[in-house]
Image (cartoon, rainbow, N blue to C red):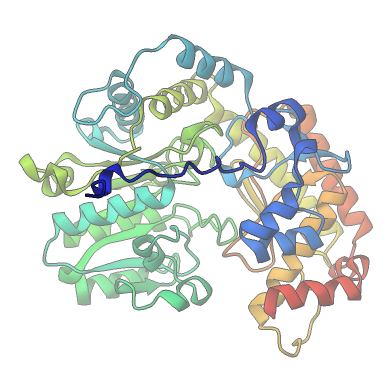
Length: 485
């Protein structure tokens, strides 16, 4: 008789090869690998092809928490990071804390089905911070996750459970809430939504239009699970609402019994000059989403804070298993988030964002006056700032949609600003936008130098057409071929 199947000899295979070892990266850094080549081969290929053509692909090395060096050795002041780096990169007090945690704690890394001192402390800190400006949230509850999009997904589920007969959400044109399927329904963009429709039905209103909101609530309140609003449109180009709009939004929502979700992923925790920009503008939301700065630039952490009655509607009794996250509320992430909150509060970075934000906006408005053929407008909310740019061409480009001409304008400006020594943000939703999200604790001298470099960028490119001329037609054609086929 032959051997049973489970006793059949197996010929050992050679161990798979790992192309780049962690030890090589630690020892040699960027010199150990051609990062751009591997990203273009195995990562988001076309994105990195575009960045490579623009000389923006990196990798970048740290000079300080607020300064970088690109692959050519160029010194850059760091105003990028999409608001996720409140202290810059590898801020020593946070890094030292993380090292202490990893060497000293014996807490379970992922404390499923059990209490966690780090998660509990973070939950309590988040509620205390919100209640310090919105006292009605003193007994609110927290769900921890790993990103802003996850925080929005949790907020949507909370609202749907709280209003089980309602199926739709009110959102606003120009908003950005994420790209997971639920959050994507709130991010009204043909580019993002097109291939993935149908999505959850929304009522999309003009941002800041009180009459449109009143009309929608008057007609459809019973079918609206929640109103979802950014206190300032971030990716949409740093667009603040009209004065009094958020307060009136809260009043209208309350009169119809509709909850309000404030998406504070980008504006919250000091970036816009307040702990919660929605509350500072007169709105006391029922649900708040947080992420970006919560991880201190070290780890991804998201949080959804909701009033107790809303939280309990989704997670009562044994139904508390309705929503969960394997990695959300992990001990290391919770510890880093707690320390990040402490640093933000102890250093009063909300007030510093107000002070430096005003200083920066004055410099930006002065630049708009001096370079009207490059800049159309300057906007800011604390340390969330943006220029709107003049288009590189004032006529339609055959075969290229108007929105994409806008995107190319922003990309070419980002490239030339990089040449001038400033690393800034591309706005995913904004038209002709050049956005700045510098660390909230950037030294003032470096902050002022950043705007000196912005001035130098504008002096070298006094008209937006100059951005195109400097890039060159051959490279532009290669860029368009990658971008649009």
